[in-house]
Every structure is written in structure tokens, then in C-alpha cells.
Image (tube, rainbow, N blue to C red):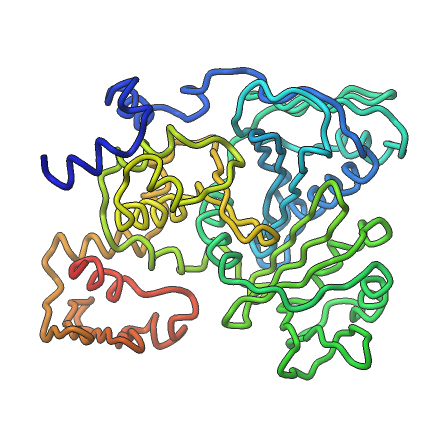
Length: 442
């Protein structure tokens, strides 16, 4: 038995009991069609007022835009499974990501199955949410085709809609940024309110920084060693609706100090809001995901692992490797591919990935990135020539449109002579030429 056969057969107990045909079926059909269960969760909210405020904040995010794209989307993704509910979405410009993590104590009901749907939050839903009182009984039903909210005054049903393509692309990028973040500040309720009272009015230009002076947090135009950069600071106003009920907030920052996130804590649930480096830059336009897609793996491996995992389940690659007899190197590549497809989210508080089922054909994600397509085209046309290769150094020539680009990859950096790399210096992901070279040598 070859290593390939061993790794493939060890991927999943599902493939051992159900056979390879099920993996092929998963490859050809929508995830929810394989699941084929109409209702995922039915029960009541234990803190309906706070939940409604958080849902309203999500609706505010998905109806907003801070770039050239006008507000047009209002479609939260709803995931049910592993005794948790998650609601998540993006602003229309794709530069703000929001997610509500509802812990088991936030809901009292039954998880009939695990799965994901994508629905509108229209005016009837928003009106119902705004009318919810603190001690009111509210029932929630999450199904494959709709989401229902039932209060003492109204019953609202929102039907499933198509998942926006920009959101799919954003989901493949945003968790990479979240996984790269560390906590910088913790603010109690009073400190949080004081901070937002210093938020600049109107639309302002230039960078702002959250800094701490004499025990007080504030916004400043001056960077310090411990400050956190906020690109497009006016986007923080999306959080104003929950400031009065928040217990505390945590502020996170990425290693490159370009992106940040705020986690609002409510005890039974958390609301996360992440911000792209600037208002004009959406998460779907970032190319960091390409770094993890340089090695082609059999798609059946990905689906074999998909058959094991439930929505919202903590993703522990080490335990999965041990329990299912998967080589650690193979598991690393599978993890990268799942992340690159948007099938993994990241929980900042738990410092762990979770599995996300999405209501679309997973194979579609492979065709969404033009740089990935173009890199594969360079390989197919034999447009890449390796000039020099050592243990810690690669130099290559890559044919372009009437020009030959020079690519150098060493232990410190990777660079290319193309216009894309010159313009962004790697800040928006690698160019197709570097990607093609990395795919060639992997």
C-alpha cells in the first residue's frame, strides 16, 4: 500500500462505512442537499433583548457600505450545530466582517441537525427585533430553507437566498487575518463608553489609533508602540447600538498592525467585528489565501474530512490526525485547503478554528480567485523557468505580456518585478507569478 493510499483510506470512518460513492456524491451536490434535513434548530432565546440588539447590529453591518459599492446586501449566514448558533456577514463593500457567537446557555431548545442557511433580514424582521422587550418570550427556528422568529406580537419568516459571491470570497480570507491576531486591550463598560465618546465625528481621513493614556482609552492620530491602528475609523459606529448593554470589549490586532477586530462580550454570547485595513479595501480583495493553495491535493481528501465534521465544531487538526490515522503533514495541507475554501472560521476568544458548513458547492470556491486561475495557466503553458534553485533560494523567469518577469523566493522574502508586486509589495497577497513558481516547486 502506498503512502497516498494509506493517507486516503485513513481520512475518515465515514468513507470506511459508507464507501467512496458518498464522497463522490458530496463532490457533485450541494452540501445541504446531502444533509436533506429541513430543520436544524428549534427553541427559545434565554436573553432575547440582548440577542435582538446583536441581530440588529448585524443587520446594520450587512446593509452598510464604506466603499464604491452601494449598500445592497442584507443576508446573514446562520450556522446551527454543536450546541451553538452563529450569525455572520459582511458589509456590502466587504470591508467589515461581523459574527455573533451564541453559546449553549444563550438558547434553550433542540438541535435536530447541523447545517447552514443564508437569509434576508428584511424590514418586517427588523421591526420585530426592535420591538422585543427584556422579559419577552422569543422562539427561534433555523431551517434549511428559512429562519423564523416568533414573539408575542409577530411571527416573521425569512426565506433562504443565494449566498453573495463576495461573501464567499471574504470568508476565504477573513479567518486568516483573525488567526493572525493577538489581544491588545481589554475595556470594561465604562472604558468602552468613554472610548466611543471620543470617536471622531463624521467621515474623517487618515489613520486613527486606539491608545491608552493615564488609564483612559481614546482615539488619537498619533501612533505609539502600544496603540492599535483603525483604518476607516468611522466604521466603528456600527457598534454604537450595543454599547449600553455590553459587559466588556476586547481589542485585537494583526501581526502586521494593519487589521483589527473588536469582540463585545455579553456573557451568553459574543459579537465580533473585524475591519479590513482601510475603508476602500474589502476582505474579498485580499490575497493572503493564495499562500495556502500552492499544493494540489485530491479533492476527495477534503470531502472525506468534510464528512467527519459538524457545523461550529472546534477544529483540532492534531486530534483529527490521531483519531483518524492521518499523517500530520497531510493534515496540515488539508487544514490549509479547508481554510482556503472558507470552511473554517476562527474564534479569537478560544484561539481555535471551528468548522463552517456553507450552503454552496464547495468546489465553486476553487474557481473564484483569478490569480489562482492565472497561476495554473502559467504552469499549463510552461511559462515558468527555474533559473536557480538552492535550499533557501529560488530564482525563476516567468513570461508575461511582452515581458519576462523575475521572481526570487528566499528564506527572508519573496518578490517579483511585475506591476502588482511593485504596487502592493505583498500587502494584498502574492502575485500570480510568485504563486505559479511556488506551485511549481511544491
